[in-house]
Length: 398
Image 1 (cartoon, rainbow, N blue to C red):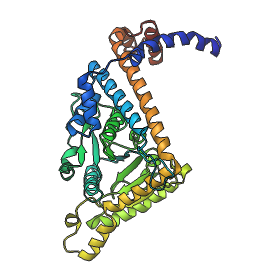
Image 2: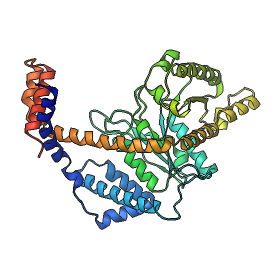
Image 3: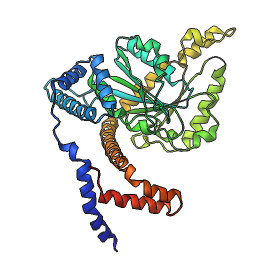
Image 4: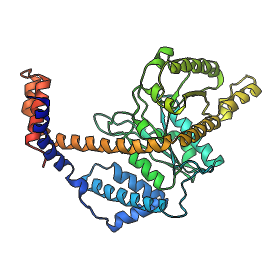
């Protein structure tokens, strides 16, 4: 059979299955007064409403899923109406670029790199010195056995949680790969709608392939430590290619010299890899940083003036200056606008695959015989997968 004939024979079955998967997408769930009040509370910047909205989005209850869809639809409509007002200017100070209502920053790195401490120090600085409204969304790993999460990242953000203009909301990843949850993009959207202009997404922190967060944020920061490995580890593709900024954290006390060596090794590794922002003229920078307070970072018995100078040079304020430089460069090149469009498209397809997976998973109890044949080596896994697909085409989920 020719390829054209195969495509024509499959197309009717695909359309039939697609009509089932997408039947709810076009239905009007209606807007209840409770959901409208919740959405209005989010748009007004009420923290309690924001927390309830995030809970609704993260819920796996089918009824909550429909309510969350109605809430998001209403919020999108209200935001579009605000952008069309005569006074709703979207130009920056130079009147030549379109500004974003928020700037989303992804923070990733290996466990123990000091991601939470870094976010706590930087977020507190932004709240106090820059008068920013900061939202932090740390993602915690879930147990593969019980499904539970400790949600302990927020315990390292005690200073930030005390700020009136800061919001910290940990979430479980529910065994989702990539370091974030499958609702991270929409949670960022709610925080933006609530008026938070700086949003940090802290990933689980598991390894070199944790790049899903790069599709949810405007800037991707990789945090490493002075003992994160040799130059060969940096050359490995994956997360290094996606990073817009690399921060060598814990550059304090006895670790300063080692941190400088790590910075040079990382710079050499980056020179041998391709940067995703190269086409817009941005090369990934490597910076040293100490996330501790100056009174903690100083080493006993050392030269206090020299250590104070080093701590000032490696402060989180210097990192924020580089972040602002990146943001301005991306705005001038139109890259942030492009990224937001790509983020929306990526989130859309994530929900497509999630819906298909959930519906197919509902059919699994009817496929035990095929599974048994595979486990008994009666048929190969490839043949078993084809048998499962044939069953799905014939029996779409109800």
